[in-house]
Amino acid sequence: MNLTLLAGTSNPSLAADIAAELGVPLAEREASRFPDGEMHVEVHASVRGCDVYLVQPTSPPVEEHLLQLLLLTDACRRAGAARITAIIPYVGYARQDRRSTGREPVGARLVADLLGVGGLQRILAVDLHSSALEGMFSLPLEHLTAVPLLAEKVRLPSATSGVLVAPDLGATKLAERYARLLELPVAVVLKRRLSGAQVAVRGVTGEVRDRVPVIVDDMITTGATIEAAVQSLLEAGCRPEITVAATHGLFVGDASDRLARLPIRRLVTTNSVRAPERGALPLERVSIAPLLADAISRLHGNRSLNNLLVHG
Image (cartoon, rainbow, N blue to C red; front, side, top):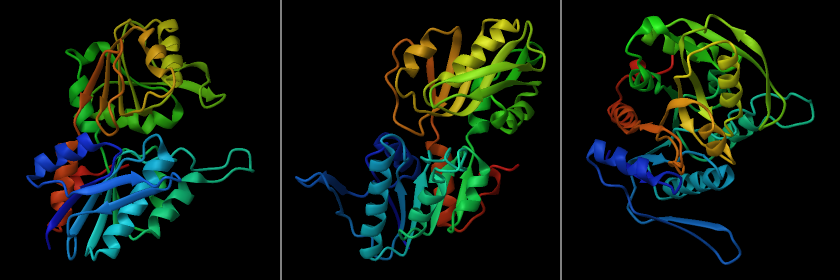
């Protein structure tokens, strides 16, 4: 069956890059709204009997991009697609994977259920907020990682002077994956989240004095976690030559201004979501189009993805 690549409106430049890597055109589609605000999509290319790959990160505005993905999936299903795979590099609601107060939803599970009944056969995601999210999906989810790409980008000239830093306990396993590739020791910032945009730091475990920190996380949203980590590292005596690496750079609210005030030499993210306004940020972007194109090619040919996946 023919491979068909289709993109939503969330990150069309990434979809175009994937298409270029694969050497296939993007299928034509229309996305508009009715006068009452309802979303409308239409696929203009024939997808009957095709192996369809829908590229749509569910980045902000999450609800809009999620619904559009569901509508595109249904359109392809009703048009006779043989198989539909969603390429969702950034998965929205991934942090809502548990209840902290007892009177709130488990948003990640609800989104997983919606995607599970929409007509998809498989999902490709990149560096989920938690690998435990895989268990919430009823359909197969392939969890790819951009860590090797980012690690190579932030590699220090001398490993003896560096330290890999997890900005909170939740990022410890991620930091250890970077540390194995870069052969650096690991330090952890002990953080407590006060709200969606505020955090408090209790200290740093690990030796950071006179070392060059490389702070790693899966995403940057408001920048509050990175800000708190940088301040705590400076207080602990690190060198003011700080590198930050994250797969998903959302930069919502005043994140860019907040981070621009810090002594960050390099800020490295992938192009999993649309590029933010750079402003004064020392932003560098690593393309994940080759990674996703490789995964799509392997899935289409029924070949293993093993060395592209997150392990541990």
